[in-house]
Length: 250
Length: 245
Image (cartoon, rainbow over all chains, first blue to last red; front, top):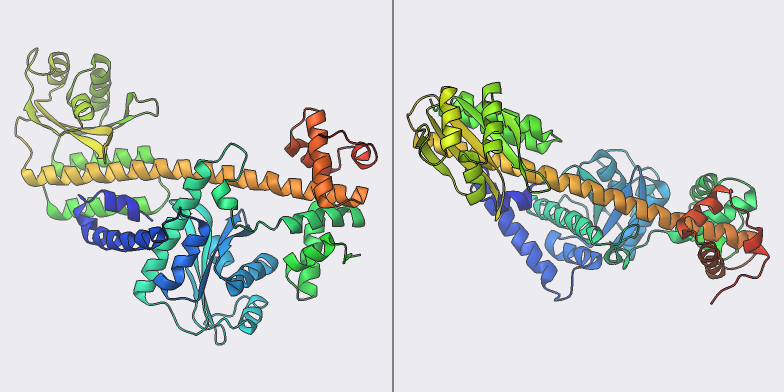
């Protein structure tokens, strides 16, 4: 995305028309973001999506390497579930948007265009989700995660909504980098941690399971995930039970 | 001689390059070469500021050009430096030995057969990042259409540099975020290990890990890492009274 950059360099005739459109779109989205009057936050970034893009809910997932790190924010329980499921199952629109670096759209999960996400699809359908979209969070070649959007009715985003979502994802990605750039060395920026769920309980549980089972923490993480998959439960819920000592995997 | 189709193709090719990951030096060398091929100038070169603020030579269309630009930097006078310092275009100027704006530079350029020069700043908003030098073996000024294409080349070069620098900075910040998150997660894992080993809750485990790090003048991250790796003797943390305030 060079939306912001192109806009600043209005002199480039070849891109002038595109820049004009992107500029107006960007202005509208920035205005919506600032409308709350408060400082920007990941919650605010997600909260503007239903109004701008015409979806029921939105969430932002951070990724690193090949793994979801967790959720920066989500607007509602369903969006949270969509993220929790992807964290547990390692499949879904955000996982694909990030790992393939493409926009992912599934306009009707009940009659999907592609057979994918065998565990994710039935679970979100049950929660009333019909369409899901994943937009990569990236700045230049730097990939950070994905913006997740859902609807309770089938159908693609319109071209306008799609273009708006691209800009929201672009703004979100820049916001993440800007926030982290101001963080003390070795720390996650406070703005990013506020409202985020990096699944600390899962890592607490992995530490506990490693002692219980006499295995490495890495193996314990796999054991936890396998247990969750085998029992049709969210990894976060399994972890909570382990931490509360209600559950032993052995 | 300016040809619209060639110019458009060049601009399109350069814009294409920006979509993918690219090497800035290679791209700017392409800009210099295109100036020669498309604009009918005899030689072209690009200078850029380093992070320290000093101007350096990045790309030249020929070895003669490279040496002249190095001379310009050494003599601290010439069209490229003026464009950079003022942030304004240096309009076509016929070179005259030992007079005019750049006596030292002019003498050197004339001895290499160049008769006229112009230069464009590589400017992004209020910041001048460098300059594009255009040299000609004739005294004929560039056609106005050619100047516009040169301007487009300079703008694209500027965007490529700005985007690349932003990307490199973004990469660094993203890696920092990833590392910070990883050490955070390792601390959570270590809390789980100690909580289970000592049959205590997570908050107490964290207090003990932190106190242990403080007493031993160790970094919490290192203590956590060793706990998770199993290389730390956890007995003192499990059984002994831990001094805390």
